[in-house]
Image 1 (tube, rainbow, N blue to C red):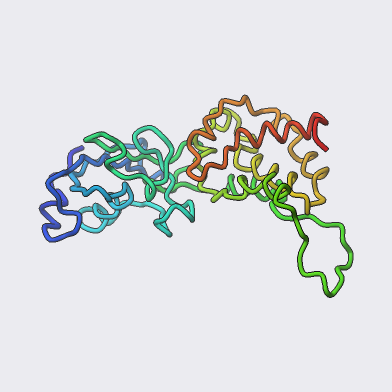
Image 2 (image 1 turned 180 degrees about the vertical axis):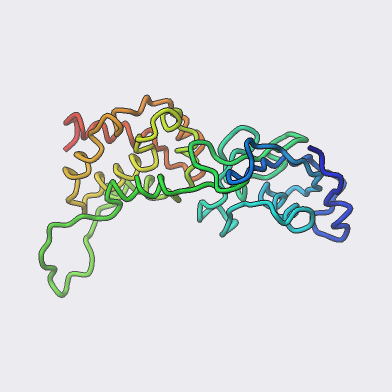
Length: 255
């Protein structure tokens, strides 16, 4: 379904006005009204710094206010604007138009998440599985001396988990995971990687309880190690590696 108006016509004085333009194809779907998803096309000018989120918001502001999209920080920190961009899970605020090397940019909601409307999806499953693995330090201390302010770590101890602490819960890894698509009970790469983050933390005492939680047919053993989760992570967390390292604890190779 082609859109007659263009941003160039509606926004002649905008910083986005440019001799270069792309066709932005936005998936539209309201589960309360529609039987199937459809695409609506818009001609959008861009500059070298224009992100996919910039393009979507320009359309939303000038051509179609009803487009549903989730975003917040616009600097790849909050994880709100995850979506499928030209077939790959990405952050819209972190993906520049020129990086896609295409005259057509197609945006769709993330896979493996229920759709709220258009590009916005529900995150309840991700948050529930994240909470299930106890994403916080577990201590058995009953009393802390008044002059003790923190638990010291060596640089080597910090190195064991710091990479996995960069997770922003954007959901891209779960969206890319083929097992998430076939097993609605699978805990998912995001939660498993965060389980490793705390198991590997020298300050934490909750290893045994976490390992029991993920030692399940829908837990760590359900991962087939496709590696697609790590390929799409915008922060370099590498959930697939975290899952493999976590299996080392499960099998007794690490203590």
